[in-house]
Length: 406
Image 1 (cartoon, rainbow, N blue to C red):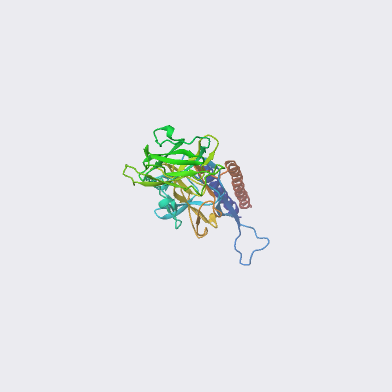
Image 2 (image 1 turned 90 degrees about the vertical axis):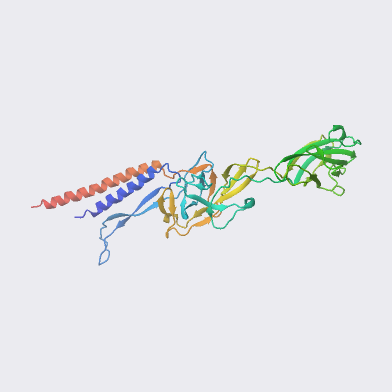
């Protein structure tokens, strides 16, 4: 008699229960991928070859295959948490040793590196001056928390409507006397050190379809006369043939910044209609220095920092890696895998390109374990274990009967 079949069945069922138990225990592990025990039958070798009447000698576990299906995405309160929606793995570095993970629970260490709970550093493309990404070999991502430098204003764009019904003014312009001008508007501009200055422009109608433009810097008139003249056509649009734009306005400052510095005042889209004066748009390209207040990760992996001056800048970009055979990856614990000869070389790229998934900031990917299904599988595995134990018991009873023959 042979107990081999029943014994192999017991071992296989026990291994299946271990796999199910591991899945259940990791049902709340972020980024965990469930496993599945796969079995194959076993036949003894025969010198004369297999015959149609040959009986197998049991079963064995052929592979414990991980199921890299997508887990649900859950929102979190940590802006550094990142979820992958689609294919790909985070590329992590531990003192130069590369591993891969689907767990996007990250934080900053004392050096500004983005790390997981075990200190492994997230890798990607670093940003240089002006937020230009270095798209060579991925390196460990480090958030630069230095202040963003000030940017001096070089251009001001004003979209105005000057009231054509206004009467012409012949009095000498005086910025402190509202009767010497028809309209005015003001905008904050910045010098090379980020100090704010008030550039105020004044519009004086001198003749039909003709307006003189004056300006002050922090209340002081710029120059002794106009900074330019606007001529309009009869349809209310600027006569570009007789109007020179932009007007170059030299600003003198006493803050220690570059002085004077020129600001170009663009009025190309200004109109003169028979309606009230209005400022429809007003913008300038300067800003003061700013301190980093936070950052988030966009769908393509770009880490965008926001600053106190309202500006934003690219601080780096997260990369993802895929494999021809992800089931060939070797798990090493702590939600990490390493490549193997079976998985092939990692294919590294930017999220949302090729077959790579997209990233979602302030979110995590839940375990893909279906707890209900695992509990049902556990019942099935238990029945299989009991059935194999029963075959051993039956074999034992038959053998006992043979032994008792007289």
